Length: 244
Ligand SMILES: Nc1ncnc2c1ncn2[C@@H]1O[C@H](COP(=O)(O)OP(=O)(O)OP(=O)(O)O)[C@@H](O)[C@H]1O
Ligand SMILES: [Mg+2]
Image 1 (cartoon, rainbow, N blue to C red):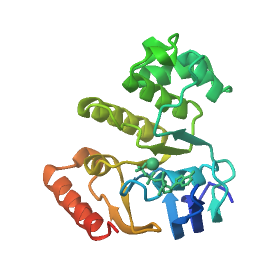
Image 2: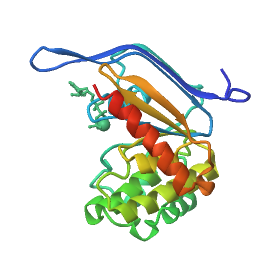
Image 3: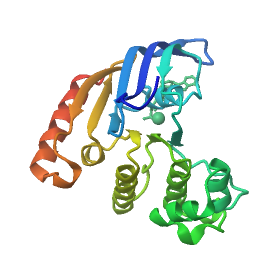
């Protein structure tokens, strides 16, 4: 399958994904779950805690192969991943963390990405010398360093103050728009989802299924308070209806 002329970046079908807990109890997290992402769009995945969002992302990026179903990616797909925690190598400098993720990249490009994300002054620092916000920026820079065509982000701005979260989100959007990378972002923040995404996928029920598929029809730059409020209301109602 070639990416040229093929607008689908990713197709996921999960017939069944279950975990066996230490007690022996088997919990089905995903069943008959399908997801298709088109090239170059930003998708937000929103759903209650414990409903399988991280599980789904781990399956998509190939970290968890213990499921029934299939994930279809074009063969040349390069995935950039940002986990719920920054997960930097603590004994390597910021620059070395970037270099290790993207050994083919040249240093000028890596410095530029770090600059774009506001951590260009910290390239010689170690992760332990960074604030959480700075570490999150480095984790984003590391994901971009590999020049991904699929970017997968698991609550990348969680536990940051609102101003910083918003600034980082804007920086993310600028980079995504520059690079046209297909993006799947997990967030609990409905405001963030409406502000950032082209499409919002809502998860509900257990095992999880898609209970809502919202197209954000206004372009990001033209977003109005009225439209955002209406869309958030729609999302809140769907999530409340499908919380169990
Ligand atoms: N390694 C594991 N072993 C057993 N159960 C697991 C494991 N990983 C996840 N689970 C269970 O699978 C379900 C989904 O977990 P997952 O981490 O995907 O949720 P989530 O939607 O990402 O939640 P959150 O929003 O809190 O991050 C949870 O009920 C969790 O207890
Ligand atoms: Mg999670």
